[in-house]
Picture 1: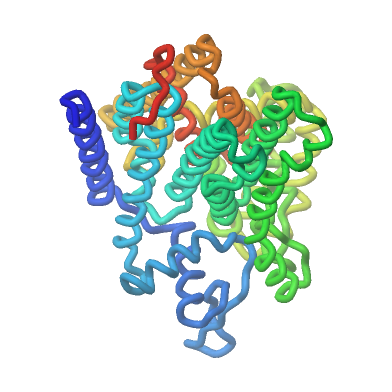
Picture 2 (picture 1 turned 180 degrees about the vertical axis):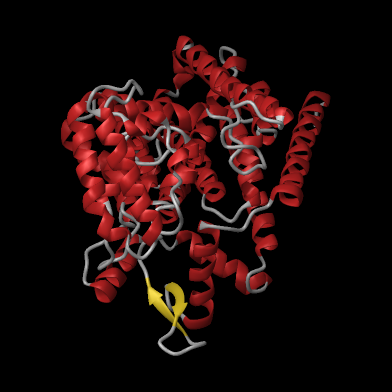
Length: 499
């Protein structure tokens, strides 16, 4: 091993050690097991103890319990928790966090390895440090949620895709067959990573929607450039089509289970996060979408509905006027009075009577949408997306939700502002790296660049349709951001295996 290579591995080891210490600090000081984590944990416990995929509820007699089957969560993460509970002990969440720590370091390694193959060893080392010291992804290691495993599946998908491209091209050049060469182990690993990602979160189908077309282009375009007949296009695309089928196969038993249990065709989790027969509160959701932007509204209003009080003062001024800019007009006083009356009635009877109030929320929503449709369909969704991307990622910390307001916790507000600036720096570095990559003609990796860009664009389009703003929904951008940042270190003809 050369001195230069030895130095490279020394710095790579230091980056991983720094990433390990950062994640251990988050686990030791900011671990959190609440909310959705307990829902996943309950399903996992029932899987282990009773072989039933469902939630625990009070039974018909005092002190008894019953297990209600559910389909509102895909089985990927509950199965992961069930495996951890079997290995490390029931509800041993600390062990789960350590497994997630290892998965997140693997994400850093995969992103750096891909950057090394695209841009060279220097980029690999830079990306490894950038990913290992990223506090936004490291923070979610400390809570039992799907995010950490999803990030690993994304990084593994893009890394395997690139290796599949390289292996196919290499084998073709060695005359081992233009078609059979594409059935290599990286094809199956890419398919497995995408399938696992979908089992973790239904929106990860967008990852496959971005990667599979790029794989098809790789398969079909290369034979055409070599003047092969168009009749062979289907044969060229066959490996990718088989892989796409493999991505969908794990959803088959889940769909069959949902049909047998609920008599509904549900291959993914429902968007409403409700089981068959449960009320879907579209009226409240549309009313909420007609004014909500900030994450603080998600925490104080959206999450409280059907479970807690909604304090009128927690709503911003634009929730009480017809114009979403917050400026009042003659009709706003009546709207404010009716909104306050509705919230008062709900707070008196919540949470059991929530469905009864949904038609009243629907009336308010229709009035607000009719008064400002552009704001509802364009302005507010874009504002929510920007809030998810640019807000300080302190939702897992003891930082005020309204960090920008003057308070006696000035240090927390300064930290939040610095955290937001740090987040913006990651976005700016990645954008600059992408531009540098493009100026170098994609360095022969146009397809993976398009797939990465498509995954981000498709996810942004999805986030524009969501009711609630949550910064964690944009964490899936970070594996792509890490790799793109490596473009700043790219050198002509420097792309070579580094990790």
